[in-house]
Length: 193
View 1 (cartoon, helix red, strand yellow):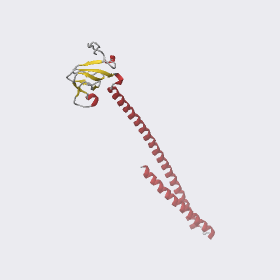
View 2: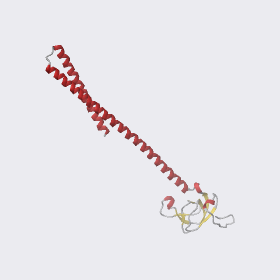
View 3: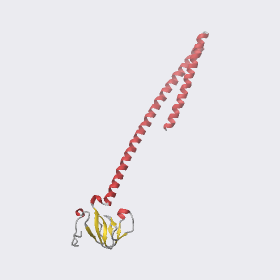
View 4: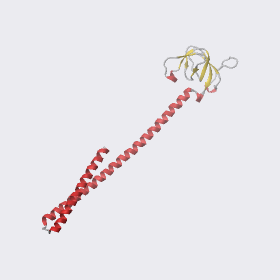
């Protein structure tokens, strides 16, 4: 730190405050954000900006805490310390981005779980419908067989014969509806896969 008399004293970074004047020697790290008041030097800001080439600094230009002074001495006036520096801001942004990514991952995982449950439930419903259709088909086939047996075994009068034929037609229509329902269930199964 440079005091009002121009004398320099070593201080810890935590003691710096905005408005302090600092002497940054060649090869030293710049301890806080500031503005160059005197001197010229190439400053390595790669840690902050990613730029591999040192940036030439002269009076009036901003310097960023955490960058490294090159061959020249710089006198700077501190503009930000601690949580107010550009480096602290970058760290906050990175931390916020990580939190956002974690939150987005949780939302994605939650939606994926709900979708999986819906698919599982739809598959279970499909399996139950398939079993019910198989049972209905079996009952229709048995009823048709019984009507055919009755027609063959008994010689019936014309009214009873007409009633049995109507029952046979009704059973055939029920069987056709069953085939259509089975086809629709097969389409639903294809969509689930």
